[in-house]
Image 1 (cartoon, rainbow, N blue to C red):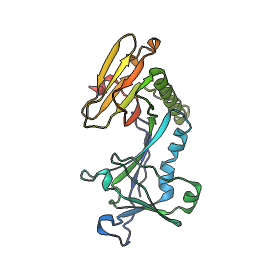
Image 2: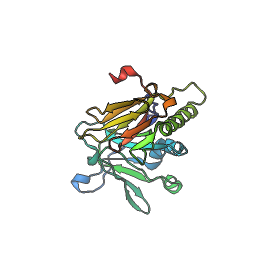
Image 3: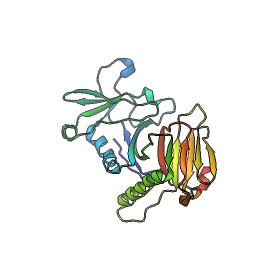
Image 4: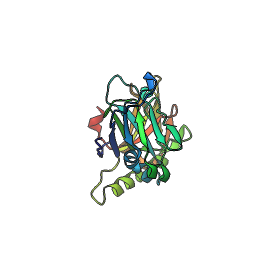
Amino acid sequence: MAIAQAARVARWSRWIAIGLIVAPLCAPAAEAVVSTTPYAALYNVLRPAAAIGEYSRLIAIERIESKLPDVRAPDIRITIRAGSGAIAVPVGSDGNVDFPRGDALYAENPMVETNQPKGSLALTVSVGLRIPSTLQVAWSELAEGLAQADALHAKASGGAPAATTRGIEVYFDAGAPASIILAGKSEYLLQADAAGRIVLLRDRIVESEQPQVRFSRTPSRMLPYMGDRESLR
């Protein structure tokens, strides 16, 4: 199994290619085991989730996706073959997963089975901002999340210069219009693109006005943005 770890510019993450050996196990055709990997290998990739969890306004986003164009996230099946019994790991429609973690599983190091071909899956852990519980929130609260993301990046860089966040990527479930209003002394309306994405850039925010951020509906995820204006065109 090939394991790789990489820091992305837009968001701090690590990835792993899943898929080791063809397992000669019997299962229904639709759920056939195609490849396996030791639990410990996945556990090591998921370690950043624990560090992210130390920050009150950040969340760890675990996602799995296939490199094969015809495979959708709901097609992926993952099972941990623990000694206490099989543990199914649900995969959301957007690829979100929540792998069980614990010292006991790490010590046992059971095999993790998937119904996908060797090397075809990528597991990522990304930094996300905690989604507000209301549709209106003060920008200052969101800015606290960006400050925590900057602190996390600085810690992860080991003292080397670290990039700072430029704003927030807000994603809404696609299929319906979505917008954000920045309400300070003036109001600015931002419309989501076809992918349900809006980028709130820090340099558009007048901190002294203490603006309110109004969501037309609840976002599906929010990520620290570290790109620039050019990448938004």
